[in-house]
Image (tube, rainbow, N blue to C red; front, side, top):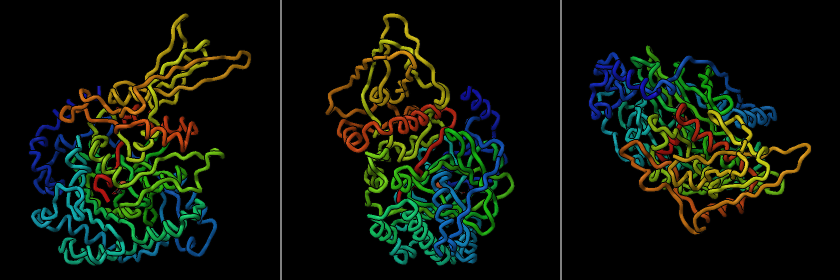
Length: 530
Ligand SMILES: O=C(O)CCC(=O)C(=O)O
Ligand SMILES: [Fe+2]
C-alpha cells in the first residue's frame, strides 16, 4: 500500500523529478537557486514518514546560572530532564547573545551569500574530513534525500581549537572568528553540564578522569541550512536520528523545525518551542551508555518550512575519539537489580559498524527502519540461541503481537503439538526475514505448570551473521545485523545475565517491527564521525 502511494505521488511530482543525481549532490540551496517549484522525487518520503500536522512540546527548563550556584532544584531538574525527556532548554547558559547571533549570522551568509563554487570547495566524499560541506543526512546512502545542506567543523581535541580554525572556510570573513568563539562557549557549557550530570548520576570514582577527558574531548559543529521548501509536507530536513556523543547543544534561529519523538514506543512527534535566548540541549548515545540507561538519547528530526529558510548549529560533544565508553561502575550492580545494559563501545567498534551497515538503517526506503549505534550494541548483547520449547500446558505462554509489540496473546496449541519459535541467531542469519519474537509466561492461581524448552544453535565458536544470499546492497536488501559470536554473548552474560532481557528485547523488537511505518534512524553525527 505504501509502495503504491509513493509511486502515485512520484508520478504526480513530474517536472521536479528531472534533476540529475549530480545536480542533487550539489545540495538543496543550489536546487532552490535553479528555480524549482515542486519537490524532486528523490526528496519525497513515503506517506507514513511525512511530517504530518505539528503539535508542540514545551521542553523542561534548566537554569545554568542557578545550577552553577549550587541550587539543588536545578540539579534535580537537569537529572529529571535527561532521564525523562532526553532534551531540555538551557537558560542563563553563559553563551553571550552576540556570540550566538554572530554564529548564526555567519552560517546564514555562508549558505545563502556565497556562490556555489565557494561552498563546493569544501565538498568531500570522505565522511571523516574535518571540514566538510554536504547535503542531506548521509548523502551516499540515503534512499530518500533530506532537505538540508550542512557544513561540518570537527575539532578532534577541543584543547587544540586554535590549530584547526585556519582550515575552516575563509568566507564569509567573520565565519572563522564567529565559529571559534561559539565553539569555545559551547565547550564551557558542555563542561559544566557534564560536571552536573556526573553529580546527579552519582558518578564519583572516575569523575576527575572523565572531566579531564571532556576538556580534551571531541566537538563536532554542524551548521545546518534548511532552505524554504516548495512542498514541505512531503519531506524532512533531517530524518529521525539520535546524536552520537555525550551532549548536543543546539542553537537555532527563530524558525521552528526541531521535533522530538514522544509517547510509548515513540510514535508521536512534537515541535520544540524554545524560550527566547535558550539553547536546546539533548542527551547523546554516549551519555545514555555511560549512565547505563538512566539518561535517554531520544530520536529527533527536523521539519522544513514552505516560506522561511531555517539555520541551526548543533554542537556535539564527547570524550576523545579513542576512549572506550561503557556504563559507569557506580551505576551497575548485578546484585541490586541494576544490571549492565550496554557493552563497552569505542570508535573502532563504531567504524566497524559503519563499514558493515553505514547508512543502511538510515534510509527511508529501507523496510527495516533503523537504529542508532548504541541500539545496535544492545542488539548484539542480546544475541542468544535459536530455540524451540515444549510445554506441557500451553495456556501460559504468551507471544508479543501488534504494531510495535505491546499486545500479548496466549498461545493455544493443538493437542500433541510442540511449539517452535525462531531465536535471535536465526533472525540474524535470515537478515531479519525471520523474526525472534518476545514472549513471556503468565502463572496460574490454581495450577502449577511445567515446561521444557530446548534451545538449539550452531557450534558455540561459530560467528553468526546474515547469509550472503540475503544481502544485496544494490537491490534494497541491506545487511541488518553485525556479526555476533558466543564470546560476545558470554561477555554479555557475565555482565548482565538475565537481568534485562525484556528491556533489550523490547528495544530490538520495536526497532524491527516499527520499521515499516516509522523508518526511524540514526547515528548521523556518527556517519559524520567524530
Ligand atoms: O536543526 C535542528 O533543529 C536539529 C539539528 C540536529 O538534530 C543535528 O544537527 O543533529
Ligand atoms: Fe541531532
